[in-house]
Amino acid sequence: MQEQAVLENRIVRDTFMKFFFPTVASSITLSVISMTDLVIAGNLVGETGLSAISLGLPVVIFAQIVYALFGMGGAIFLSVHMGRGDRAYCSRIFTVSMFSSLIIGVIAAVLGTVFLDGLVTILGATDVATKGAAESYIGVLFLGLPVLILSPVMVTFLRNDNEQKYAMLCVVVAGLSNIVFSVWFVLSFGMGCAGIAAGTVVAEALCCLLASFKLFSKKRMFGLVKLPTAKETAKLNLSIIKFGITLAVIFASQILLTIVVNHALGNYGGLEGIAIYAVIKYLINFLFALFDGVTGSIQPMLGIYYGEREEENVRRTAKIGAIVMLVISLAMAGLMFAFGRLLCLLFHITGEGLTREMLFALRVISVYCPLMALTTFLNSFYRCTGKTGEAFIISILDNLIFPVSLVIILSMNYGLHGVWYGLLAASLATNSCIILYCLISRKGFLMLDKNEFKREEGEFRRILAAEKENIPELLGEIEVYCDEAGIGPKQAYYISLVIEELVVNVVNMAGDNRKSDYVDILIAREGGRSRLRVRDNLTQFDPTEEVGDMEDVRSGLLDDASEKTAVNELGIGIVKKIASEYSYRRTIGYNNFMVVL
Image (cartoon, rainbow, N blue to C red):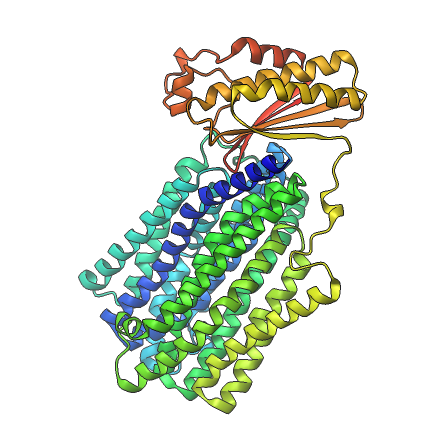
């Protein structure tokens, strides 16, 4: 059992790393897109441009709210049902998520364009020059709002369906395109802030186009289907929103917080104070992008493991996610503290007074980083494991009640410094509430209940290295299990036969990589029937379909359907013949073959 635990730890770690690098690259690129706007504005437009970008943050955040509700919410909801193998329902979730995101984007674009003048004033524009620049920037963002929303939604669903690298490619291409188009529109056409916004919209439209090539492929586990009835669509939307509401609250609260901070900065620091906050806010967003790399990696894993009621794997995933997030926060804090002057130069923050205030803000925010890591991690974990109530409360406290009230109170007493103190004090207050609640409830930080993971009694579960030598021992253990479970000789024989054929297939697929490949066997009783699941971490391979030469399967070189022949055709044929039900699905990098006898 100790050897199995070691193997499971390695599997969880390897799965996390498989998701982490593409996901964090995507998140960083998205953040760089935002910071690119600031760098271009600061160097090509000046402080007025920086202020316009800062005032436009609520529009960007609105796009993130819709993405959170229907993109992240839909992805979490879909992951749980992927863990249960319900492909038809997954397609309905995907269709409703995409449709709702698009409709809201179109409606918001029309309303935002019509009421643009009043919105810019509400957002904090205090003089004619800033208002003009903000209107040109925000106006173009509103026109492109549908693609600004759909882009992250599509990328998230791609990532959840084992297309992490392609999702990363879409985001990286969009990020590089944003730089090129923004600079081109500003320098060649003299579009100013409008050119920066146009560059962002065009880049996100390109991301949507690239994502559609894979996302709407017939090979996906889920796809667009006919929209359900209005009643079912509304019901699905409520279920989707339930998983995305807490993240949406975070983004929505940021709109109000940004407005409050902008007004406070306008009163105590003028245009310079707003420019500093623009930089601080985007640095915080960059840190959140790194955190999103972690939460985006553990989200599909937690969804699948939680849906399959695998408590230990849920805990293993949480542990590695928390450690990585803490390391990232400490590294970011150190960089902000040590390289403050370099950041001032990067964003064209000049002047002794402005630089001094910027350095002070960076030092305060560097202390804020590890506190934010804990809050962000627990919030994400609670969302993925169905504790939406706790996650919602954390979101309200951390992003609305504490920061808004403390920024107002402390800025009245400490001026511009009070804004930075308020953000730090809000994080301290939220974390104190979380710790107090966990101590009182005695559930621990993860708040996991054994009843959530209650499974059928008498299950058989083994994880083995994909080596031929392990098969005889495995079959012996299955024989003992069937005898102890009171399974009749005929069904016991069929169970052993099916497991042997499927495991042999995995061993053959493993080739020369058997030390890093594994097979996970689960046998459960449901009434008078036996449910078998064989999982492996090899390249995608559906044994229910005809495939070509084994070496081609391992290397992913199959391309001529007319020449395909079955691998282990006799063994798979026997499995299909004796099974009352069988199915295949690919989830978070695993092949899963299910058989009911």
